Length: 480
Image (cartoon, rainbow, N blue to C red):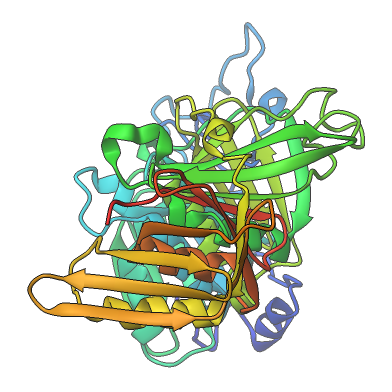
């Protein structure tokens, strides 16, 4: 069926109704009813996409087991052919091109172009009701985007994700896309106004779905607040595979005074970032009753999942709210028409509170922008990664210096307020990795302003706090 011909069931009125998220799709004339194949259904978000015994989708959607079961003793009518085969009918859908392009631009982020497992290069399309759910997975995380569509029958198929995304972005003009499948053909057609593509498909039964089960803890946060918390901690996530339990952000709830606090923590062993806020209802006890009376279990969210959520909620794409669900093994993020389910890192996050100093009694206050400018300037003398800068702090000034035996040296001076416990003048000399310090300054005070550093001595970690509310950073020193 050509979805753009004059005889097409997809009329202009149908297209207009689709853009208003109202599906107005006339029924397709079909052949005489035929016996239905055996149901081996696929369940998507609690909805059953019916398939036959070969994994091919059936027309008409979920099957009623009662209607398709045979009572003992039932026999076929005498005039029925014993080897009769069911009539396999095609299924079609009309989708807004911009919405489908955006959906594939999202799901392709977890799809490898050349996976050793062919099905992982495909995205699953499941049409049900008045929408199509596009799902992709890399076996560790699964992402699903739902878009409105005018469909004539429920169906499910898998298509090459990156290839279809290329068609949607570069094919001939057209505001709508027609998708056509047929149970007896391992292919799907994608039609634009003047162009038709035929894509080879793989069986839906081979597509791996993450089975997350029930989530005992659910809570909702402001999208902007959650993004800011991730933004304040993600840079400290370790990339060392040997210490896999540091390859993510540790999210947990704890009781501080008379309130419950939701805290995100990340460390790579050289620095530690911690961001906290008041725990929302559902994350802990006595917080609205949805927490089941217990604290949410600590969860180490993998770096890949964190980066995916961070990218999809950044800037103008940031949703008004984000729903978070946590179990012992999985985490789920849902916002707008997107749902992400991910495995958690199976490990124990270290007792990070033991490495946060509480007795640093020398406090320096300086402007974040001035300090960042000084660090970047003295770093130019050396292009080596991990080059240390020496900080000499006295009341009234902070002197930064970098020495490169091959090139020379550089110094910079900025104003700062520096004081100890008593009235006696104090000074501290300490070295920091310039790369880590530049990152810390940007995370502590993303919009500029003052930063406070709490020092002890040249061999002890330093605590930093900036204008980002609820944020704390710890930086280990370097020998200089």
